[in-house]
Structure formats: C-alpha cells, structure tokens
Amino acid sequence: MSDTVKKLTILPTDHPLRGHVRPPGSKSITNRALLLAGLAKGTSRLTGALKSDDTRYMADALRAMGVEVSEPDDTTFVVTGTGRLASPSAPLFLGNAGTATRFLTAAAALVDGPVVVDGDQHMRKRPIKPLVDALRTLGVEVTSETGGPPVTVNGKGGFPAGRIEIDAGLSSQYVSALLMAAPGAKGPVRIELAGDDIGARGYIDLTVAAMRAFGAEVEQLSPSVWQVAPTGYRAADFAIEPDASAATYLWAAEVLTGGAIDLGVPASVFSQPDARAHAVISSFPNLPAVIDGSQMQDAIPTIAVLAAFNETPVRFVGLANLRVKECDRVRALSLGLTAIRPGLAHEEGDDLIVSSDPGLAGQTLPASIDTFADHRIAMSFALAGLKIHGIAIEDPGCVAKTYPAYWDALASLGVAFTGDRP
Image (cartoon, rainbow, N blue to C red; front, side, top):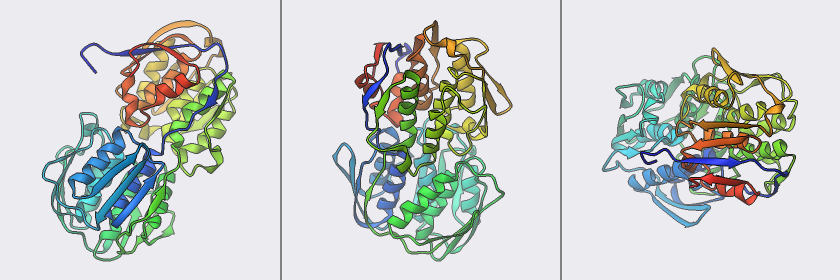
C-alpha cells in the first residue's frame, strides 16, 4: 500500500455467474504439511498446495532453519529435511500468518539454540500467551514480553515427556502447535484442554490426520485429551485438498447471483471445518435466524455479507474468537455493513446482528470498505459489490495472504472492476 489508499470498485453483475473456478489449496493444511515435512527425515512432496503470503512465510522460515524447500510448480512443494531444525541466524519474520507463528513457536522447542518468532504490527497484537504458558510447564525456556510476538525460545533440542494443559479458548492453533511438536519430545506427551472451550475443534482433527500421514502416533483419549508418542516424523507424499474457506466466497457468489460455479470438487469431500458453511449458504435467501460461527470461523465474514440480502434478519453468535483474528472481524463486519447503509448491522457483545434487506440489490450505495488489511474482509465485501453499485474495497492486494488469484477468479466469471486491481 502506498500513502494513497488503493481501491477496487466492484461493478454489479447483470447476469448469473457461471463457470469453472478451482479454489487454491487449503492454507490450513498446507502450513501443517510444510512443518511436518520440515520435521521429517527425507524428502516429501506436497501437491495441491497453496502458494500465498502465509505459506511462503512458513516455507522461508523452514529454509532459515536448514530445511531444503523447492517449488517445481505453482502448487507443489518438495521438502527435504534431516529430522531436526537448526537455529536460524536471524529472527523468523512471519508477517500476519497466525498458523506459521503459533506452529513454529512450539516447534522451536525442538531446536538446539535460540529462535525468535516475530510478525508484523497486526500479528504482534494477536495473543500467544496460552501457548507460551503451556510450553513453560514442560520446562521450555520461552519469553514473550507483551503476550504476543516477538517470542524468544531457547531450544534444548527437544523437551521431556510429560503432561501439558492448554487453554484453547482463544485458538485451536495452540493445541495443534503442541500436538505437532510432541513427536519430537524425549518421551510420550499428554496434552489436555483447560476447560471445555476451544476454537474450531475441527482444525485439530486436520492436524491429527496430517501428523498420522507423516508417521506420528496420536491417540485421542477423550474429547479433551491427546497422547502423542515420541516417534518423530517420516517423509511422505501428501495431497492437499482445496481451501474450504476460499470456496465459501464462490458458493456465496453462486447463490447471490443465481449462477452455477463448478469448483471441481463437491462440498461433501472437504475435511475442513468451514465446509459446513455450504449447507448454510445453500439456504439463502432463507438463512437461519441464528448462526453459530464458533466452528466455522473463517466462513462468517462470507455469510455475514450474504445475510445483508437475506429475507429476514440474522444473528451471528459464537464470534468471540473473531475479535483476535487478522483484525477484529466482528467490528470490521459491523463497520463495513453500516458503511453500506446505516443500521444494516450492529454488535451486541460479541454477537453480530445483520438487519437484512433483499431490496439492497440494484441500489446505488457508495461505500468505501476498510478491510483493515484483512483478506477475508476484502473478499467477503466483494460479494456485496456483485449486487450494489458503488462498493469499493480498500487495499485489495491483501487477498494475497491466502487467495492471490481471487480477483482473477471473479473476472473469469465475468465480474468487472474499476480502480486498482492487484
């Protein structure tokens, strides 16, 4: 972004969107697979992978820690590791990539030497203290002065067997981070949740499935307890499914315009939690009166913008974790919808209430949407521009975080733009 804010104005479509769009690979699975391949001994081939800002931060961090990572094509990583990560010569800068930051903080405990994990101004505001506290219970020397990055880990080449209790109320990524590091411990590690709250539990299932594909032995003893054996990892060839969070924008564009967009894969085959949004989106324009976002968090911006055109108001609940994402997404959604029309949305505690009005379609309601450099805010509010004249997306290039080809995908379906298209 230059000093002059770049904007991209979406031109409403006068026809149903039809065509074929293949979503990029899953960010969540790609970053898990990259780390596990980096911890493995041997050469792994990751196909169908996402190439975006977040995954490049992870790949570059692994390179800095002695892992060989090559990219023979746009959707493949070839990763060769020794089974150990080396202490990097400089702090690992991970932008605003939450997965990379949380996962590498735990993995740094396996390094013999210091590791500094840092991010940009947005990542530094995102909490990591629960993960730091959990690592300390195993004797890992780790410091975070602010409760967020930068985090300094003085690794000792591993950590002892033991029990870790983790508060996962803010993010399931804390649990995933500990799970993925645990096979490198000196003995069995037992990971237990402190309390019942956990953000997006389905992502832990993704983690465990990926770990097993790379040779880990993980036993779930109860819904809140996992036992991990000290097996290390072995190299594997691993296919990554398309990104369900990215798919939500295309599913929503399809129902909003009465179109038919072929993603090349049915919603039923996705293993990611956000895939459950397909059933909700398919009910448009009669979305449920109350939608719980706790287990499909990244899909909520999509559905909230879609709800603006619903027949009846929608209350979104279970959104507390959305306040500590790339930005405060509850606030960003409320502000963006209100910019389109005063009173279109408001907050009640952590709930978001969208007033809904199908009559918005076809109106001219000039609004400049502050994306807060958040890719999901940019991509979701582009949907409003398919039906309303005058919707301008600020900082459209922020979609590179997870879906660099997003604007190209919309253009391939016949969507037109004016302004600063990345």
